[in-house]
Length: 387
Image: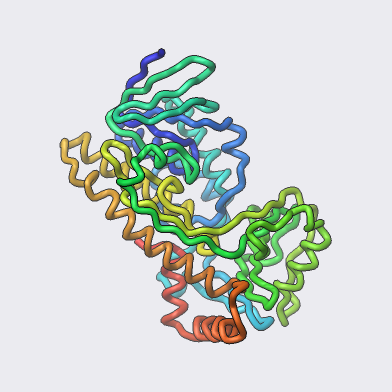
């Protein structure tokens, strides 16, 4: 078995693991990143695309924001559509200039892989038989067994990863909510017809107009969590999108070739605490939010920023205070994001259990939200990112 040594072993080469490795490198802390998928798979998987102001600032401040600044699409507001009318929330004006930036997770990962490779430090793709132990990670790479000895382990391997599963069940508290609907999402070769996102509540269900670039539109429809994607040919998708997104001003999404589509179920999930001995969880390994609030990638960035600062303090002074505080500090923000994501989801989706009263209440909530500066400010503060 090949023996390796590092300070921080990182399981997972998604945004959380790669960003943590980069932040640690800037602090002079060595790390090794292990990923069971291929580089191509990691880069090409389509996930989040909305970055909070704080995530943008972190990437730029850590030297990986050059392409983000050049290609990212800054949005200073969003639209909420209901009753056939679009209402704009001017987030920048309500928050003193804060905004969100549309820049796909695959682009973030691409940038972080490039900067990682430039350091010359190990980044192992396509590993197998990964297991986590008290102070080591065992894995197979190129058919050869390895053992990585490390001071700390960062579990950045997602909801289905092995790091959280390696913690005894008795030492974790799990909080979870399954939603009775999912999202049918598509990517289409079509120039965005709106310069900002449009969240729409329709009697037939939720719809979202978004984008990935100046040439690619990202759109979603509320559907059953087990919806058969084969029952949704392209013509049916466009017809339903046009129905749910239709507004009195005549706006509608541009149509184009659909080159990717799929159904994603929705859940809220939190595992507490986010530390077990020398193992620290970050990102989707510790929490999942419904995508309505655009918080998943941003929470991961916040987690690893806190973890990198705590590890830097430890290596500089030997103090474990910030490491001891890591879980509580992250969870405080995570639960606020869970609340916001649940609220956005509940306000904008038609639940199969809802009756006429619930539907009228939803419309009243949206009416209040779009007519109250205080309510709009609350949305804007949460959407662009809490401290």
